Amino acid sequence: MSTFLQFHLLTTYGPSNPNRDDQGRPKQAMVGGSPRLRMSSQSVKRALRESAFFELDLQGNMGIRTKRLFEKLVEHLDTQGVPGDVASEAAAQVAEIFGKLEAPNKADGNRVASTLAFVSPEEWRLAEDLVGKIVAGEDMPKEKDLKKLVLRHADGAVDIAMFGRMLAADADFNRDAAVQVAHAITTHTAQAEEDWFSAVDDLNKAEDTGAGHLGETAFGSGVYYQYVCVNADLLVENLDGDRDLAAKGAEALARAIAQTSPRGKQNSFAHHPRAHYVLAEKGTQAPRDLSGAFFSPIREQPILDNSVASLVRTRDDIDAAYGQAWDADCIMHVGVGGTLDEIVLFAGDAVRDA
Image (cartoon, rainbow, N blue to C red):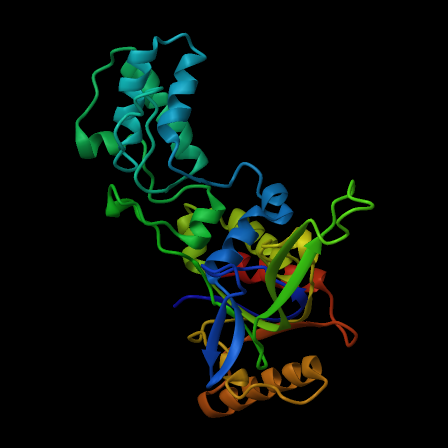
């Protein structure tokens, strides 16, 4: 039996474009037969990992997702005076543990992996240790036994524990994500719009007074519903049983999801929204999202208040039909009651007591 910590958030976005599609427009989706604006789970997770709450509160416990392990290992050996060809050979042997390397660059001999690998701090340290041993001429095991010297099923990387990883080189060392993040959608009908803009040449004062540049950019605005589900037991397991670190991660997550957003076009739109409504729940019943509250889009003003009312009503209706899906909850409703500090404390305790 697992303990689940669930978050439901409603957040307002003014005109902005935080998460773009292949044409540079805000991502969209059809929900309940009406067009909505959307932010992908990938963009939300990236924003969470890059937030100050993760960077500062989880310092030393964050993984690095990269194709450039080979390059960094060569640099590490170079600082120790290892000749270039010897360093490259050792670095390639270790970097390939995380994924296949592309052919060497003819100009500088550098190599990158064909896929991104999520590397924990402990694995990074072990990789550096291993290249040192190879260069020193120590006897090394082959293939799977060599991988076991570096790869870990569980360690102290909170972001890998939360969001999981797929390791192309060896699926045995994949990690199941303990945190599921839904795509955020507007609670009401919303579509992308176009902004035609011009830029003026500062030195063109008298002759041609037209714009020096013409362009367009897309944007949208709305109230977004975001759902996040944490498997508290899996989070602790992924962190090698470190319950306090798992709780610290849940607290950072609670702070970040209420105050962090994807940063697409942020310099153009200055979107820095904070959640208006946060519902946190914990319990051992099977989790359920509340997106059904918005399959019929909210149509009447005030959109924000009616979104909260629809969310609460849907939750009550599901509880009445299926039985209460949570053992305890905590609510922050701006202008009504509750604080983010209470949500954070609730999230940490939910994981600590799991």
